[in-house]
Structure formats: C-alpha cells, structure tokens
Length: 133
Image (spheres, rainbow, N blue to C red):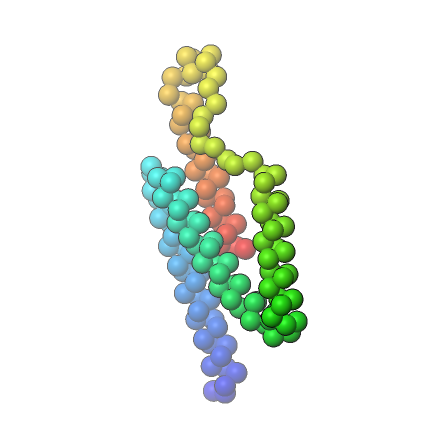
C-alpha cells in the first residue's frame, strides 16, 4: 500500500466519522418529541461556528501566503462588513405566535401545536442543509 492509498483511507475515515457524527445529532433531533428550541439553536450555532472557523483557518493560511498579510486581512474584514450589512436586511425570526383570536377560540391549543410542528420542520430542514452543505 503506497502513501497515496493511506492518505485516501485517512480522508475516507475522517469523512465517515464526520458523517456518522452528523447523523447521530440529526437522529437526536428527530427522535426528541419536545425539542428545546433554545438548546437546538445554541447547538446549531456552535456547530456552524466550528465549521466556519475550521474553514477559515484552512483558507486564511493559503490566502495570506498567496496575496500577502495586508491584502488577506483587508479582504477578510471587507467580507465581514459586507455580510454584516446583508444581515441587517434579513429580519430576525421570531417564535412568538401570531394570535388570530377567531382561530384560537375555535381550535383551542391546536394553533400552538401547529406552530411547534412548523418550527420543528424548519429546524430539521436547516440541520439537513447544514449537514449536506
């Protein structure tokens, strides 16, 4: 077995570990009947931050070596400012239910359950997108 074969096996092994870890986390979310949205949001934010920091550390080293320290940092902070501006145009999601008094009188607590199902689907969908992306 050559050097290239061992590197390929290590890469495949690490990819398998990452995929299995993601699957275990997704299984926890799907099987949990009453999700704590605050905890799910916290864990998802941590995972996204971890992935971004790993990507940044990998990309920043190559960028600084290719275009220089000053240009690499300037473009990095230009990107931070750009996404900060874009984030101001995107409204923050809210978990507060929009009350419709007629609907609440007819259906009782079903409106709250519908909202929980909708938010659960949104969290599951964003988790799948994070895992695939």
